Amino acid sequence: MKQTELHKLIQNYAATGIIDDALIPYYDQHGRWRGDTIMWKPPIGPSILKMISASILSESRRVIYDKMGPVLRTSFYWTGTNPLTLVYSEIHGSLVVTSNASVHGTNLRRVGGHLMAKTKRRIYLPQLREVGGSFKALKGFLLLAPRLRVVGRNLLIAGYVPPLLESVGGIFSAYWTFGFDSSRLRHVGGSLILHKAETVILAALESIGGGFLLGDHTRSLHAPQLHTIGGDFLATSVTKLRAPRLLCVGGDMDTLSAKGYYHPSIKVGGSWTTYPGAIEDWVARDAARRALKCKPFFL
Image 1 (cartoon, rainbow, N blue to C red):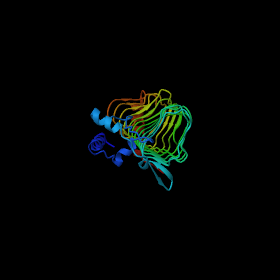
Image 2 (image 1 turned 90 degrees about the vertical axis):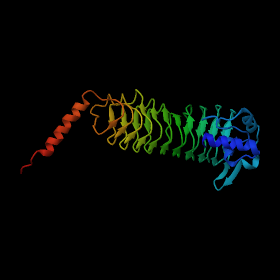
Image 3 (image 1 turned 120 degrees about the vertical axis):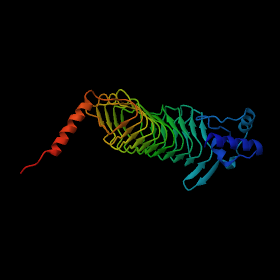
Image 4 (image 1 turned 180 degrees about the horizontal axis):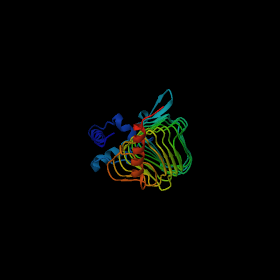
């Protein structure tokens, strides 16, 4: 929901005392107002904010049931240190774990808001398909979400890459994934940042809305379908680079270590740092190809 829309709904509550259904995801499982403090804060006056913060969502409006099981219409916040077991098939709001507790949601298929977990313990979400907002689990080296396909905003993870992931709407940042393989990923709306990856396999990736930033340890990049990078493409240390369909880089491009990687059809918005002699080598190879095409053939 946009900031202005939420502002109007809160003002309507202040005037009528009625909690609109669209506000329900901004309450927690106990019916207390939480807002969306992770992404932004609504520009409302302190008196209205105090009023909405004191409101309680009735228990009858917090949970509904469908064929997959109970659905939590609010957000779920967990601050306890005991293991967290979730029974819901869906959470319309956000799932926020601020403690070092393990998380088990064997039936959870969708989180409509954000999924934020600060725990270092196991995060077990075997049925999770979609997170509508951001998914942040930078300490979650024991994360398991094998069916996750879509993240609506940012995805910030460490040590684990969901194997069926197809789309990330915002920034995709992965830490400590030395062998980064996301073969079904097709689109990243923001930047793709791979800090420690040594090898990168992106067999289906077609476009990156922001920059594509690879760390100093990356030696191999396989991205045969990639055609567009909206920002910088920094692959300074990559020696084996396969991106034959790349056509457009919006910012700077650095392929300093990739011997032989150059093509004049690639449009670069900024400067392009190539392997020394890469341009001259391409010109020589192109001249040789043209000569072979023009050479007559005799029986």
